[in-house]
Image (cartoon, rainbow, N blue to C red; front, top):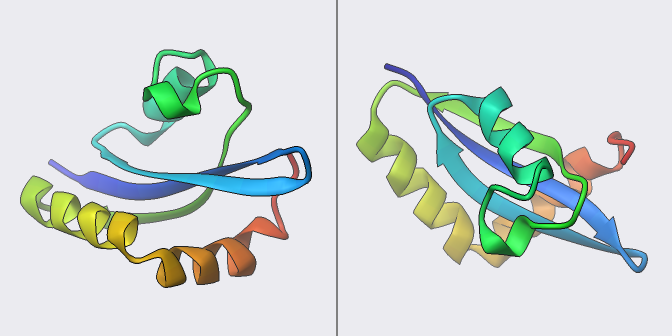
Length: 88
């Protein structure tokens, strides 16, 4: 089975915020976030995927998700690189 590590982003009061997660079904997970069924942090906002990477192992995906969540500088670089091309 394949798994994805993803970053979703949105704008709130002219500030870009992001969320990092992993899933085996990326489109369903994004729909859940946008429907208010995702993580508590993501409820009530319109999200767009700005980054995704596929892994063939759940453990590897979880490890990479953890690294992204803990590494603010890397997440910021990804937001700057990819978010400017996304319309919300």
